[in-house]
Image (cartoon, rainbow, N blue to C red; front, side, top):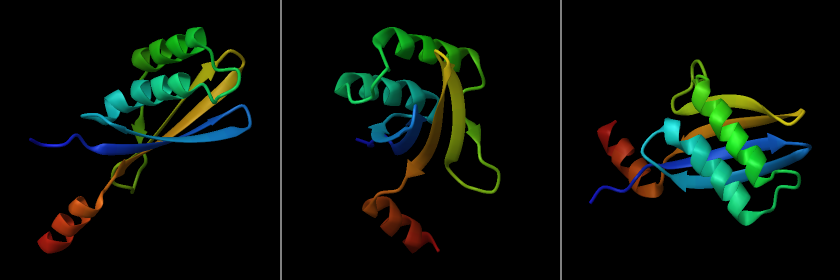
Length: 106
């Protein structure tokens, strides 16, 4: 059985920075999974269920995450939540098994 890729998200919202890791198939699924974990943990002041739903809807309607030129597996996106910017950086995270496999290929 193949494990889903690990993704790390760095979220900036209202003077706070929050880091989450999720396992999903693709970058397209990372944003919703990250926002849901932020809501589930309840550690982001001012981020309500309604605001999360609105952010997810806005991200789905937009181009979601844009790849960062010159970097592999790094993306960025943003959405307005209420009157505030929610900025998300996403990085495909290699784990030790992935690093060993990659180094053997070189």
